[in-house]
Image 1 (cartoon, one colour):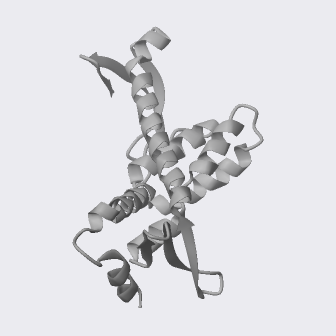
Image 2: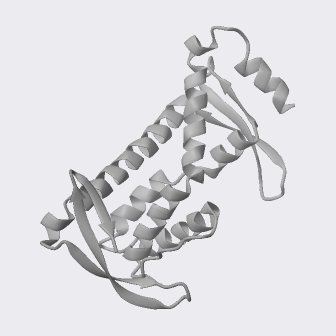
Image 3: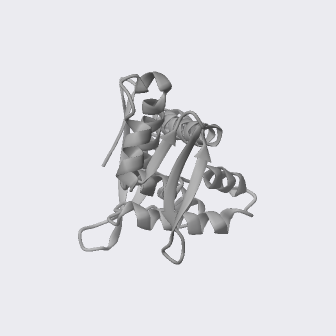
Length: 202
């Protein structure tokens, strides 16, 4: 069934790109890839872990889904925190919609350009397939918000790394790191600005 409506709606003629459907398709793919990105999810998880007063986790070996769930738990705990509440609200608005990842991964959607909507199926708690839709207007806001926040996050991280020595007046910092036996030890993390490319090394 899903292959039939995909062919009818997505592959009707050779001028499909002019209709803009391919752009929407690429946006959905990028959105889903962000949801699956270990690097991105790990960075968000570490930020909220530190805000929650937990130690920095050097090794994150579980799947992205595990850390997404942990982030959601921490966001709920921090939502009323005077220092972190705003960040929690931003993440809640930014948090990726798992439905989109699922319907893209399973090719269970159709882009209806004339009606300006994305129609897809999902399973409810009873495992029944139900039809849902997202308007192009809502989708555009979701995609742009996510893209802007990703760019802002990594730009800010790069800026802070580059200005570490200027901000702290130091070119090194003491950190606690795990060893191969699961114990922890103090170590010196050195900073080196290599022609504008910030490098941290032990």
